[in-house]
Length: 223
Ligand SMILES: Nc1nc2c(ncn2[C@@H]2O[C@H](COP(=O)(O)OP(=O)(O)O)[C@@H](O)[C@H]2O)c(=O)[nH]1
Ligand SMILES: Nc1ncnc2c1ncn2[C@@H]1O[C@H](COP(=O)(O)OP(=O)(O)O)[C@@H](O)[C@H]1O
Image 1 (cartoon, helix red, strand yellow):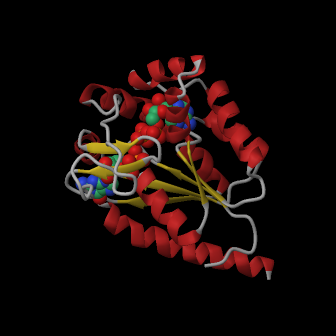
Image 2 (tube, helix red, strand yellow):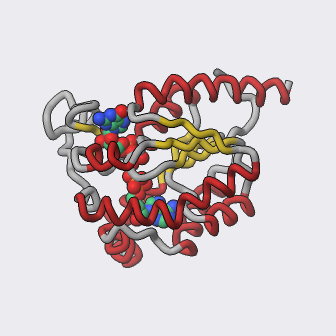
Image 3 (cartoon, helix red, strand yellow):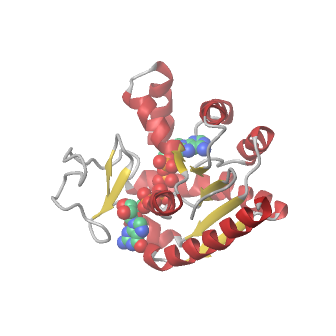
């Protein structure tokens, strides 16, 4: 569907809820630019900047990056793309970040993936990632064509250092205490849309239909 005006969406949910998987389907179907906080952080870590090293130690302990650092990083990216429609994946993760985002631009819709923690724990310990693109695979769900290699580039896949059972437990705890309040923040603004389930292939058609309806409305308002 062609977009007649700028459309901005956030995808949120606990670690491993399928944000990256659903985001890549959304960007492919609707042509939004995908901005992933985790991918941006890992690119910084890869570049071995001083800030990158600090970030890595936070991430590997399953803690969130401090709000001021994170907001500066993401908002400068958003300001640089202020003429395009985008899908923000993994930001905001705290109410302070949500407020900082609001001060910069308005968000049309927030897609919340509500997946049980038990399902997540199994998924994350079998996630394989192509670090430079952010493409993710899973041994059971979407295995790569050649084991251990990225389908597009043929480069090796890695298991993220923060996908160990112990770190996943910390990340889920951080989600409960720091990110869940963001849901209430967006609910009260009337932009939160929650999709619950244990399988992305069942959640995805609902997200797709919702976005088709939403974009039709957005386009009608412009026409
Ligand atoms: N078994 C299974 N794995 C899934 C499903 N959806 C996504 N995954 C995998 O679960 C892991 C986490 O998904 P991802 O999109 O990276 O989640 P994110 O951490 O929220 O961005 C990845 O390895 C995905 O390939 C699903 O429905 N079933
Ligand atoms: N908006 C954010 N605020 C603070 N830390 C973040 C944010 N986004 C990502 N991070 C850090 O990067 C880690 C990995 O994030 P991400 O790749 O989105 O993974 P997932 O959703 O699978 O947990 C998080 O556990 C956290 O340490």
